[in-house]
Length: 129
Image (tube, rainbow, N blue to C red):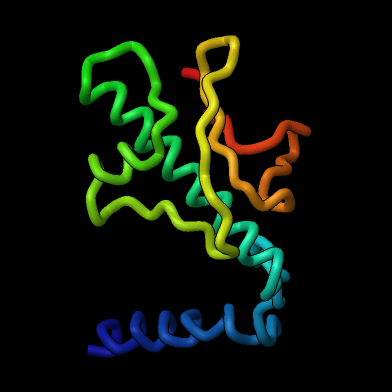
């Protein structure tokens, strides 16, 4: 009978040892990605996401139609995608699509501040597969 009580009596204090002496767990600093500030940075970020969306819609259009050419007609993409299409710049800019010499395309916004990207090119050009 005493053996049955002895084992739990020895194990229960061992469960509390990690809590002793260590105190509170260390606070780790977690870096979160910076969110764009309000105002121009936020509207630029929103516009860049819309440019990416237009580019994806253009790629889907090419696959759906079976052609090997992208379209430059933003209005046609809007009509094809229906209410899912978001093609309005938050700052009121107008979107255009140009076909590049290497058979890729670039989506542009008429607001100059929305055009720049880290690669030094204007607009949004989707990555090649």
